[in-house]
Image 1 (tube, helix red, strand yellow):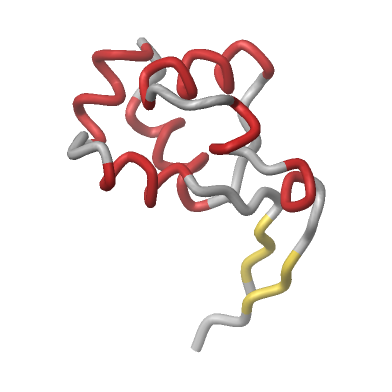
Image 2: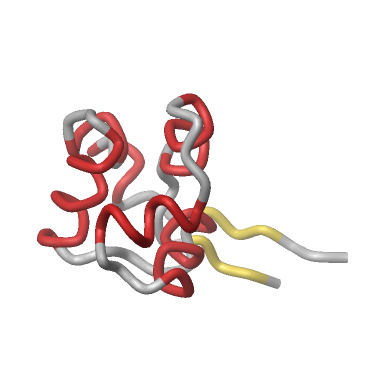
Length: 79
């Protein structure tokens, strides 16, 4: 069973912009492993990381990290 602590639109927006995960690492300076956790929703970025990610994606923080989803928790069972 996995607990998702932060649902977001990072992967969706990144792909819409034609950016790879490596591009995001270069643009934000955030380690690839952390970016991966953020996209999966298993870890939450700091306020500064959210700002860097939004800037790299060319969108508002609220678009990448919608407030109504930010604090929701969803239990996902893995087979």
